[in-house]
Structures are given as structure tokens and as C-alpha cells.
Image (cartoon, rainbow, N blue to C red; front, top):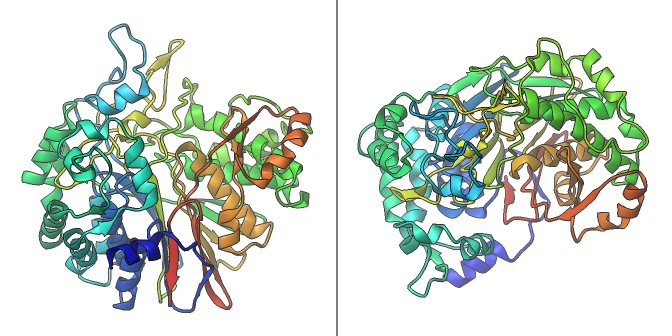
Length: 545
């Protein structure tokens, strides 16, 4: 039976999914099934997101879980309101700007920073989900944990993607209990994950609420495992934050995303705004011209991101200046027939001259897209950074390494970096959960992706594929990935896009062929109902009724 379950979960490619009433698109079939079960019980989009996230903690521990953080966009159809929730991790009170420098004042190698003392931020996803549930939940809090608890006790098959991540990871084996949980006596990844310790933790949170996570024995154990000066007081003081969504226009639509401390929403809107001004609509889908324009617009957005985007509770972030029409006009004029190579940051209104902060993050992330029977929706991107975060497990779940998303060099050429480490600060992220509305204000698309710094490009691809190329979500997710993070133009290796590499080089592009493993989860809303797509590069599915 277990072998049959494994075959059903991980062999068949995800089909295009249609539904009339409600839908969940998630990175693992069992997570999608848990969310759909809540919708079938009369739950709303937030309820489904909570159930799915708890299951992801078990089945996709390399990517997300209760030891990490998340950003959530919520659409309330009745009030026509978008709310965004910031569950990003925070630096402990003991953190200092020099946290990731060696004795000579040089940045630590990234791997050393991840597995050493100090990479773990105070987890935020449980607090964020509890706040969203209090505002928008329809089912009892404890009900939402039942699928994950049952699966953790019964055991689930290890997916091929998780097995590959475990086989490649050298540091996770050095942590106990991670070694005995993920690996057998022969040192090879186990075939099944059974996690009674996680089940006990989830039962505690289900019964007592988020307080059971942020206070008492669980908080104490998190602080001890995290090290780096984290204390139980850091956990007790954590608060999720409701923030205004960042919205802007694109070809008659309104695109809404997450604002700081994420750079995702601002960068996606900048790229789309630049593309509209560069007449992207006239470029044939996936043509050299289309790829050229996306890469050039992305260079400009990433140059601004590196200098100006950070936690707006600590530094002034010129969001309005970066998205102002006249500023985008000036920046779009820099896009020419040939590649600019490397872009410099612009000078938007009210900007401070920070030093650039170039960290891109690592692709240990997941995404959920959900639409419920009331027309409400959730776009939630969730992460432990990783893979497997800080390579430390506690109470059945891995802890994040999100503090390595801060800039390691706090000062460059006498100028501070906006994204430097500070006590209580949230590191900059690229996560970009996104909602798309038509000219009448009707929700048309719920999307997002994992992928570190490449998230921004993946989401741009999903949006232009829907709006400019009229593609369904499954076809859009399967498109080859491409873009630039203000370095080489990146083309997904082994795809049809390799055929246009000579054309791009003729336009002055330096090309880097590489794996670009997106995990796009999209739901489109139209007159005929819901259509879902799950990225074929991962084992996700879209399920609905």
C-alpha cells in the first residue's frame, strides 16, 4: 500500500485542474489534500493555508515549516480588500551588525554562516497564521492541525525531490536528531518519514494556540537549538505584522504583492512597469525580444533592490518613489536594443544613499495559492531558507537560517547597508505572493513561487504568461525560466530557450545556462470557474471541487 501511495504521489505529472467551487495549489499532494479537506468542511482560504502549511512541515522539511517564516496576502471578496501579513523571522536582541564577519572583519563563507552559531531567526509563521485565523478563519483552530498530526503519526513516503536533497546534504547528518530521523543506519535517506515528535508539537499548538510555541518548553528548546544569543524572551516578544499591500498597474490590471521587508512585491511591480513602457506586449512569446526586455527590466529592478530594499521598520524604504510613474519612465528609457550589461541603482524620490546589499537567499521555500467558496483567496510564500534551514531540528521540525538573508558586510566604503543585521530586524526577502485583478477589480490570478532571488523572475513570468500570452496556469508554470538578477542573463538549461541563446548573445547578453527550479502554484479565476496549475519541476498539484 505504501509503495502504491508513493507511486500515485510522485510519478504522474500534474494535470490542468478545473474547479467550480474552491481550489488549493500546493507544493505537495498531501498538503493540497489537507487544504482541500478544510474547504470541504466549510473552511475558508486561511483555514486551508494553515492545514497545508502544517503538512508541508512534515512532507517538505527542506523548504518550509513551523520553524520558519512566511508572507501571506489575503483577498476578502465581500469587502474587496487585500490584506498582507508579515510573518518574517526576526533577529534576536543579541544580534549585531558584525554577526557574519570573521576576526579579520571579512564576511564568513556562506556555508559556515548557515551551520554556525547565529543563522536562526525567531520563527514567525505560527504567529502570522494565528493572527490571520483570528481575523479570517471559519473553522476551529485545533481542527486545522488534524491532517498533519495524523500523517506525522502514520508516516509518509519520502518524495524523490526530498530524497535527492537528503542525499546531497552533508551538514544535516551532523545534527542529532536530524541524522537519526532522515537517515538509516547505512547513512542513506529513509524511505518513510514518521514523526511522533512533530505530532506532539502540533497537538500542543492546536490545543493551546500560538502561546504554546512562543512560550514555555517549546520556546526554550528552540532558543537552545538556535544558539547565537537567542533567548526565550526573543520568542515571547515575536509579533506578526499586518502591513499594507503594495499594488500597481500593468496593462489594465492591478497587481498586488508584499511590501518590505520583502523586496518581491516592489521588484515585480517595477519590472512589469518597465515592460509596459518598453512595449513588451509587441514581443512574441518567449522570443529573443521578450527575453531581452525581461532581462533588462530585471537588471534595473535588482539594482534598486540591492540598494534600497530592507525592513521598513528600521530604514526608510522609498517604495512610492521606486514605483512612481515618472521614475519608471526615466528607468525604462535606459532599456535599449542591446543589453546594458550591469545596471546601476537609480535615484528615486526620498531615497537614502545606502551601500548595496547583494544577498539573494537560497531556494528552500514553498508557495500556496488558495481560493475558497466565498471568493476569498490566499497567496502565501513560506520558507526556512535552507535547504533544511540551519540544519538543526528541534521538537520534530527544522529551524530556519533566515538571518543569512541579511547583508554580511554592514558597511561598504563608509556607507551602511540598509539590509544590515540589527536586533529585532527582519531580513530582506525575495518572496512575492501575488494577486492580480482585472480592470473591474475582480480577482483573476493567485500566484507565487519559491526560488530565492529568482522568485521575482518566476512570478513575472507567471503574470506576463497570463496577461500578455493568454496562457492557462499549467502551461505558464511549465514555460522555461529566464531573467537576470543584474548579472548574466540566466536561461534554464535543457529547455527550448537554449535555441535563442545565439540571438541573445548577438544583443550583448552574457548567458548563464543553469537549473532554474521554480515551484509556481497558480489559480486563475474566470467566468467558467477556477483553473489551477502546479509547477512540473516539483511534485505539487492543484486540487479542487
